[in-house]
Length: 151
Length: 410
Picture 1: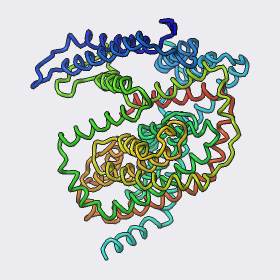
Picture 2: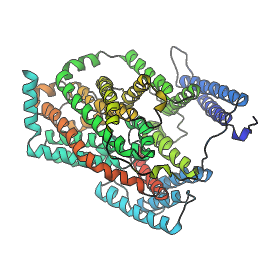
Picture 3: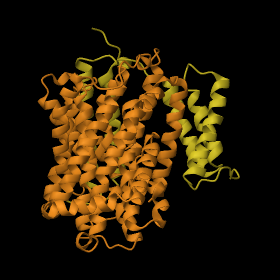
Picture 4: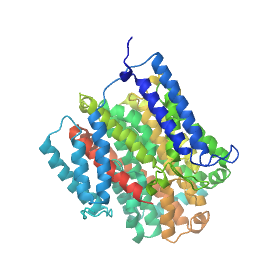
């Protein structure tokens, strides 16, 4: 069985865990460590980070020995677009108001689908935004300004 | 007989036309909002609390309780239909409930959730009436070691529960613990992993993580699938559970209710522990554990009963000790205080109409929930017919509003 590294599930999982664990340890280095009896704020993060790195190494090694191919597929396009739309939503909620934030979020997410119909998506985002304004802002009285200056 | 006497008195209070109306409004509005993906009971109650300010204490509390069950049930509905847990306790329901929905069995899944919840609610109500005071005494004796043991059990259960790879599950438990460290350290107040954002000093909310992993992760996977969820629109064969379904569910409902009631009395154990524990128990007891995770009806019946029993019994420490056993109960305490009532053991003796009226209304509220929801199942199932390219941006939108709200409130 010849498995390419780029398609090896456990290798990727292991690397991800190592990255998270190592990052946690690096960041937590600046917090006082304390002792087992009097734990400082850095104690727990460093132990957990080390533990996670060990788990990662184990899974990585296991993947190299007998790998398992990544099953199914995921969409790189969706993986980039969806979080990006959420971030834009957050930014626009602070600077711009509820209406632009919602339209950007809904239309933005819709473009993540390969099944996209441009006009339909546009109409849908306007309609859903109107509905959300009616339900959440007017109906439930959530304190979001509809449109503010973009500052 | 004292209990009998008290319950009759309670029903007398709860069955007044006015209080019935408050209960009905609470349950209806709670379900409607709870069904919106991304908004759980906590958010729903927080949003709707101002409405109850003008109402007399008994009515206000009855309405808030109604909103709570309604939202809880609404959360399970979205968990089953779109794999989006509105609340912590619905996370387990997602596992098998969503699989059932994919197989065209959303109807039976929703019905069994309603039936299980109703049964658990009935038992929970009786339990509060019977054991409220004595159980509160036991819970009072729990110290940090007991709570630590409970937590540990919850975490190990999470790893055992996961399908297949134990090492990976344990690694994810550790990852979850690390995520839980974000924010101020409880002992020293040092900011950990907050990267200078004041917003992160309160930590990352559970629902935020759950929505990210379950809702958005699911969307990304679905979009990668070329088949665009074709399975999902498979014809919905029957709306109601078959005899076979009912037979399979009786045991899980009974056991789930038991587990939920036990954990419900303990403050500090989130509703997730009860649902996880009951799910794990059913998986252990099952003749064929491999059915779990692939749409086993037991996997819906047990956690749904457990989380409703838990939700109900959380009122015990709140009413008897004035202890907020969960975020929702903290809001309830707040509502009581706003009404000018000092929560604590005195409530039972000094305001019997409040205590027993609320208990009676809980049962009435649960009954209304079933009556309201069974006919609506057909409507919720219709939601599945919406093409996915429109459904997922809508889920994104509601999740975003829910999360944004949550991070802003409290």
